[in-house]
Each structure stands twice: as structure tokens, then as C-alpha cells.
Image 1 (cartoon, rainbow, N blue to C red):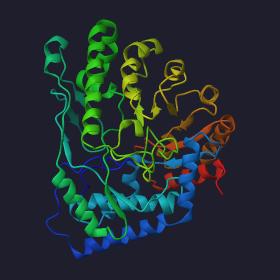
Image 2: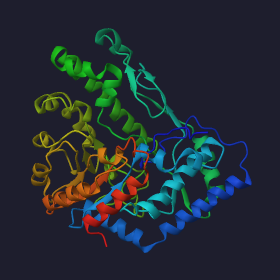
Image 3: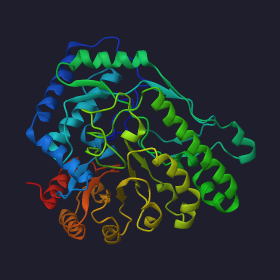
Image 4: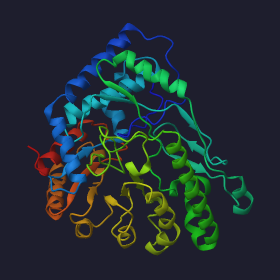
Length: 432
């Protein structure tokens, strides 16, 4: 029996839509979840967790601290915590169990800079209508390759069929899941509802699902007016979504132990924290995030014409902003450097780390994403990995640095690769 989704990320579960409450919870399942919750609470009570949170806050506030290390092996989790290790039977309980086991692994095995908290976040139970036209996904199975059959074949014929996506929240089901978690381990961990409504607000992935990647590239030359029209639609639809979430009190702060951008955590003194949170959260109280990794083959000039102008009104809404994921931003820096309240900048494996060190210096968070490829090897060259980290830390000694290991589609069937990387990275970063 599998968890409903095998896609594992640090951001957490975005919704319980599609999952049903278990008809019955066995005494064994209750014991399993409570025992795991107790382990999480024990880890969260360590003084070092508050120290780690303080380092994240200092770095995000652009104070000088040692480089921070965080490993989110994403699909590699499926090799670290395999489905046969998940002992609960009901699908929803298996998701809860997987979450708790990951927290324990982070705190006791990885021992990176991720903060373990005595909190359990329950997402909203909701659905979205989509944009009116839906892509068809052809897939070989969970975790494997897939391709999209895009629905916008002809701009003039299909564009009138598009509309902003509407969100429908099932508050009753959301409360039932929250009550279930509280009954299971609410006396051990603080259970709260916390919305996760997006990963990125960059829109190019939405464009591609509607129109196709090759078409996005060629349309910039062949149908530039239609590309502008589509990007304007996606911009307005995104702003419509943000307005809806604000007006209905559905936003949650991401200024503490929340995964923000394409890696890193949100602690900062420059936005409201949970202690002094406003009565209703607005985007201006939050970190925003845009990227356009799908347009990596597009010139800076075309990116500046067709993509960035439509992202700027979205990022203008947020108190602090993150930008970038896998795209190399050294060649786009002159365009993105003036993003309002830009703070965290992704430096991908394809970016020039020296140029980015000069460009970011101590004025931004240098969010380094080393290549995950070596960890896919059953026998990584650990000395080479150590050497590259050591040289990188020398280059970025004047920067505010986080190193995020992510995008691991496999760990070469050797789950210890992730923990070994964490140990080496922490050593080279100067952790005691």
C-alpha cells in the first residue's frame, strides 16, 4: 500500500483533497503515531533547535553567519523511508506517519540546519477548477517520466475558453482532519491548520501546461502578441487567486519554519512572526517567490520582454521575495536585481558561482543549489564533493550563504548518500 502521493518535498502536504478519513483507527496505528510524535517533540525540545532558528533569522536579515546547510532529497525520500516501513494502513494515516518519520530522520540522521518544531501542520482540504482547459498527462507511473498533451492548440479559438482558477475550500473536512490529528497526538504536538497554496508564482509552468514548452519558445517569435496576452491572463489570474486567499483569511505566515522559495526557511525579523502575527495575514506579511526555469533557453532580452514584466506585479505584493530555481541567474542579474524587496536568490548548478558571489555579495541570500547528480551514484566521490564545497565556501566568504541539496530523483538506492552529504557539508561549513 502506498501513500497517496510519492512526491516528497520539505514544503509539506498542500491539501488532503482526494483522501478520506479512516473508518477506524486501530490501537496499533494510534500507538505508532503517538510514539513518532513523542520522538519529534523530544527532538524539537533540544536547545540547538532554537539556535538553528536564530541562524536562519540572522542570515535572512543579512547578518554574517556561517553557511547554513539543508538537505531535502525530495523523491530520494522514497529510498530513505520506503513504503514497507510505513506501518499504518489507512492512506491518510500513512501520510501523517510519513511526515513524522521524515521529521525524525532530519533531526536524528541528517542533523543539518533544518529546525525541528513541535508543530504538526494540517493543510486545507480544497479543490481548484483550473483554467477551463486541462492538459492531458501521459505517464508511465508514479515517479517516472511523463509528457503533457497541451489543450491550447489555437490562440484565437481556445483563449476565450480560459478563465481564472477558482478555489473551493471544504472547511468541514479540514476541521475533521485537524480534529483527527489532535485526537491522535494533539497533547504532544501543536496541531494547526496552515495553508500551502503555491510553490511558485512564476507562471511559466502554467503557460507550458496550457500551450507546451516548444510552443512557448517559438511563439515568442511567431506570435509575440499572443504570448503577451497569455502572460497577462496568467498574471491577472494569479492576482485574482491572491485576492481570494487574502479576503477569505486563508493565507498563513511563512516567516518561521516554512520552506520558502526554492530552498531555505523563512525566519526573519523584518516581517511579522507567529508571535506578533496580524489578525489576518496579507501577502505583504509574507515571502513571495517567482522563477522561470523553463525559459532557460530564452535570451535575457526575451525573458525581460515576455516573462519578468508579468511577474513584477505579483512580487510587488510581498514583503520579501525569493527568485529563481534551476535557471542560471548570472546572465539575468541585470534584470532581476531590481525586483522589489528581493532577498533570496537561487544559484543553480549551471550558474557561474564567482559572478554570483560578486553580484550578491552581502546584500542578498546566496541560495546555492549544488548538483544532485553525484548523490545518484551508488559510490559518490566524497573527496571531490568535499573539495568543491570547500572551494565554494572560499569564493562566497563575503556572502550570506545557504546550501540546499534538492532535486534528488534517486540516491542510487543508497539512502546513506544523503546523510553523508549532510555530514560533509556541515563540516565544511564550520558547524561545531
